[in-house]
Image (cartoon, rainbow, N blue to C red; front, side, top):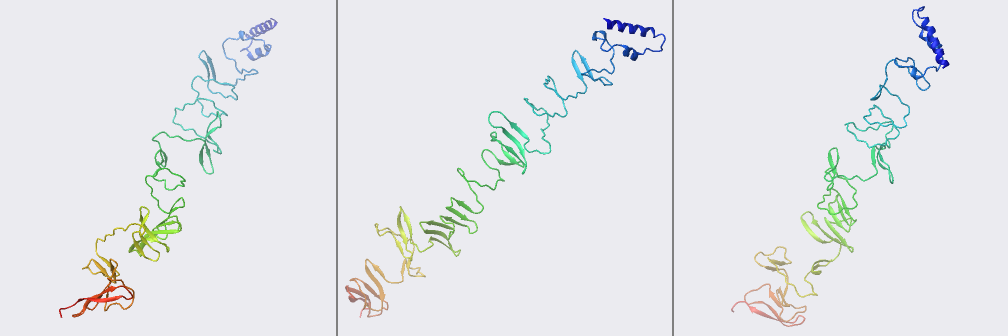
Length: 364
């Protein structure tokens, strides 16, 4: 109560002096007022200039903060610390720098997320929760993205490089020309440019254009090495094809697991198998034996003796005087003339046996 009386007394003294001064000295009036002597109920309307308190300092020269029933409007707000902030509407900011964001985020603008700074290593997206942290981050040296999880494309989608398909759910792109495949499933088609090795067993030498099965050093266009025997198929001097063995090995042509034609390492040829019943051999054409130029007028041309039903047929100027012969062997006269014989026939086996002439030539 005493403070109020003092204030009123001071105001009375100042009012009395108004008539004697050109203008009231409000600073002097304020100086004479005791500190903390007015409550908020004694102030209504008007501006409080150079307002200051322990927690507030007002140095603004124009309105920066407006309070009304709709809320508080602030033109510029600089805040060092906010413990909790709830925004019901739109929050617009030029730069937002935080240590951690927890939010369900929806991006509606066509502005990409930018990661910047002195280093980009380790920057990206992290999914932390149960188990280990899932990552999609950038790593340098060399520049690349590290993805800790599988990538599952939707059906019909592709991975491309420079807008060229690299891979999809069914096939590799056309530019994929190199690979270090170790295992594949079913192959429908395969084109190989260069050498090829399959299980270290089938080896194709691109330098010689030769294929080896069981050998890496084929001696023909196709070489099969089995149990130390090399079977070769190829050409001879670019004018003749051949098939057989590379070394001195016998060679058989078989059917049903049985040799039908056998060629010994020395060159002897056996048609049929002596352990089985005789086979039928048909020659559709002319046949010659030991003849370089067969006679086109005959079907069988033999340069030498023959046996017919185990009977010798040979040609000579006289009957044999040495050697062993069987009854029925025939020697045809190589120089037939009038009053001579067509040949001689063995009538008794022996060495040389007994021979008689037959078929006298002429009527005399």
